[in-house]
Structure formats: structure tokens, C-alpha cells
Image (tube, rainbow, N blue to C red; front, side):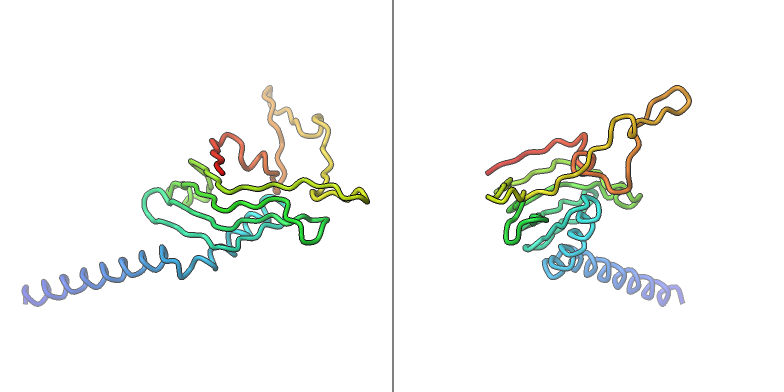
Length: 171
């Protein structure tokens, strides 16, 4: 009887290991690059309050720190047709798996290459970027029990999203 349970235990551990390895390979494969790109584009569009498109996909190398590569990131102009406000050929960053599991996205070692930004004004005065209304600083500062905090809206702007990050751009 002990040899039977030992065989079942060894086979069970072997099958579990194969399932984990297969799941690991599937999650890190390029088969899911396009669906991951769509998901990340929706997240960024909501977070930045601006349309973001990912044409090349998102590639992930799994580990304690996820290494993420985004290919073909574009931000189309909200006001001018066929004009991209920004294009980035490749964006790479790391995310700690523990932070991601806890629901916090803390980008580390952000790198962008082949970046192109077009800030245009046509003959009619139309801009390639969307003008936003800035709130007066008095509306943004909240005083609570002797300390001062800056209130944030659910949709943070690009500066809030990239605050306290080291960013490297290359061409």
C-alpha cells in the first residue's frame, strides 16, 4: 500500500508540475500578445483619459519581476484625423509581481525607444492635442488635521501616472 500512495503522489506532483509549466509558457508566449495589448490599451486609455492604441502587442517575461515590452504604442490626436499625437516603437518596463498582485502598478525602469511626438496647429487653428482646463491650485489642495494633501481625481493625468519614475528615452 505505501508504494501505491507513493506512485500516486509522484504522478500527481509530476502532472501538477507539467500543468504549471504549460500555464507559465502559455502566459509568456506571443500567442496572447494581441489580447494583452488590447487590455493594456484599454487600461491606459482609462487611466490617461485619452485614446491609446497598441498595434504590435504586449510581451511579458514572467518571474518575481515581470518584464513587459509594448510594441507599437500610439496616441491618436483627438482633434485631427490621421494624425498621431505620439508614437513609440518600443516601451519596456518592469513591474514587481507582489505589487501587481496587491493591485498597485508601480512601473520600474521605464524605457522608450523610437518615440515621435507631433504637436501641430493647422491653418484653421485646430490643435493636434486636447486642451484641458487646469483647476486652480486652491481646488486641488485639501487641508486635513494640520497636514496638506493634494486631491487626485479618479482619472489621473500623464504627470500623475509617471510621477517619481525614472524614464529613459532613446532613438
